[in-house]
Structures are given as C-alpha cells and as structure tokens.
Length: 308
Image (cartoon, rainbow, N blue to C red; front, side):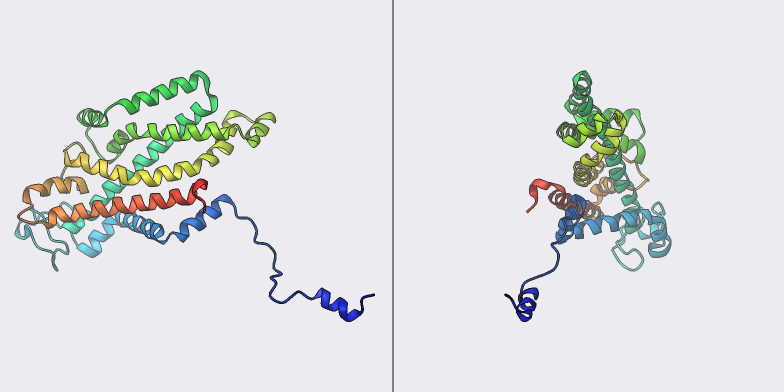
C-alpha cells in the first residue's frame, strides 16, 4: 500500500523533465515563411528589391525633394558634371541629372519586369491549368501551342514586334511576356497533373463540384508555390532582357529614361565620363543579383524537397 507521501512524490514531475505540451505542427505556409526568414541573405535582398520598388514609385517625390531636377531637364552649363553638391551622381552630355534619371529609369525597368511577370503568370497559369486538368485533345493542342512559342527565336520576335508596335512600358512588357509564358505553362501543367490525382480532389469532384471551383479553390492554391518561385526568379531575367532591348534600340526610346537606354547613350562618352556607364551598369547588376539571390531563397523555402 502506497502512503500519502509516496503518492505526492509520484504526482510531482521529475527534475529536468519538460512538462509543456508538444509543439503544434505548422502549416505549409508558416513553415515556409520560417525557413525564408532564417535565410538572412535572402531576406536582405528581398528588402533591397522592395526599397528599389518604393523609390521607383516615389520618383516624383524624390525629384521634388532630393534632387530638385526632372529627368528631362537640360542644363548645357553643367554637361559631364562630376558627382558633387549640384548633381549628386553627376550629369550626362546634356546636363541632365544622373541620379534623377536613374530613379525614373527604375520606374521603367522595374515596372516592365513586374508587369511582364504578372502577364506571364496569368497567361501561363491559365493555359497550364486547363491543359493539365482536362487532358486529352485540349492538352495536346495547348502544349503544341506552347512548344511553338518556345521554338520561336525570342530576339527575332522582339525585333518584329518592336518594329510593328512603338514600345512603351506596357507594350514592351506584353512583347516580353508573349515569349515568357510558355515556361510557366509547362510548370503549372506538371503540378496540376500531380495534384489532380490526389484523394481530396477526387472527393471534391465526387460531391458534384464544378470544374471552375476545383481549379480555382483547390488546384490553384497547390500551384501557388511554383508560381511564387517562378515569379521571384523571373524578375532578374526580365530586367536583363529589357536592358538589352533598350541597348539595341528595340525598347524604351529616349528621352524617356531607362537603365538600358542610359547605357546606350553613355557608350559614346565612356572616356569622357565613366560614371555614365558605371552607374546604370552597377544598378542593373545589383538589382539582378538581388533578384536572383532572393529567388533562390524563395525556392529553398517553398520547395518541400529541400526541407532540412
């Protein structure tokens, strides 16, 4: 027979034994966010991209408060000015303030990148979702269309469409997206083919759910991680494509500033003012590098196969 004192000892927890409840399981999104936050370099580059986007959005305010110049303001008395008080990052061959043009150029370059990603994701997701969900002849027709788009040399399509359409930020984004959506469609189709065979999709279909509800409410959320990774990795590539098209004279035309056409204008004055080449080049390099690092961090965080 166990006495009262012995019962009290049995009821007391042993020293050093943790009595708290087990840690609840995290959802996929919370766990992915925790892994992304643990990647300090990835988060730092993500913050840098957000800061650049905010600077681009607030370009008129920066012109009015910080630089006191407009991007097309010409000052022939201050041509090729070195970085200093009057022009914080110097001026170009027409006396236009370089910092102001870099800030306004960010509106074009980043705007084209984000708009192109949005267009590519929308079109690619729609085509890939329909092809993967319905299968059969619909899948065959849509995938042959994707193959045709991906088989066309992109540079020839860019040249043709730039000749037919006067490029601005919106039309240039549409031109680049007309080629880039094919890869997204393939990714989405592969994911849908995998997800649509799972039990919860079959159960939802068995209770009479419509195809539109299945695709929007059940398939799309499972495809979102793939889309997030594709978007984060695509921004840097599109910035390079936009800068290359501007440099070749197929993109945004002067006097509207963009990082690409700033390089085009500066190539003739490299030995006169190296700043005109270095500054937009460094800006493109840092933005693309930050975008790629952040994209890799997002991929590592959201891909369950890379979970440690």
